[in-house]
Amino acid sequence: MARILSIDYGKKRTGIAVTDPLQIIATGLTTVETPQLFKFLKEYFAKEQVELIIMGEPKNMDDSDTHATPLVKQAVARLKKEFPAIPVKMVDERFTSKMASQAMIDMGMKKKQRQNKALVDEIAATILLQEYLRSIS
Image (tube, rainbow, N blue to C red; front, side):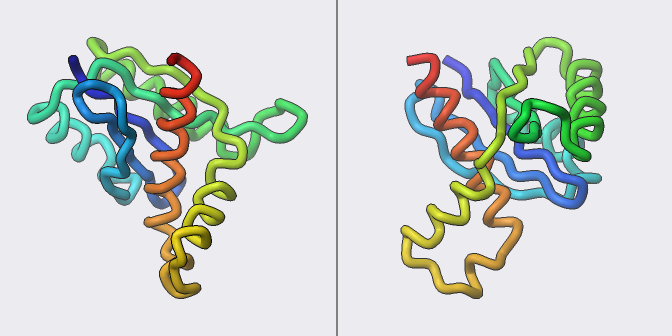
């Protein structure tokens, strides 16, 4: 089987998580500077087989788009164009950053560690992927 990759897309940084090849466990992979995202993905896809990309879809509590939604939709369009063989699925990402921050507290991380935005983005991508895996099982 191939992996599923999730993306917590941001204007500055993008968190990335992947499953194991059996699609059982979601693990944080890395955080990349957003302008480097497609270069990173090209290199990653050359080494690893990925069958699905999960992209966090930013939504307000009333289901309306956020200020970040147009950026994410542009990124999805580019993903589909550059990697046409890999389907992209949008998944509601409400609360993932808040859940990531709480997870860091629960893990006993110090305040200085919790202020690492790159780590928050990576954990948010992992939570997004875990929630997706739970929804399909």
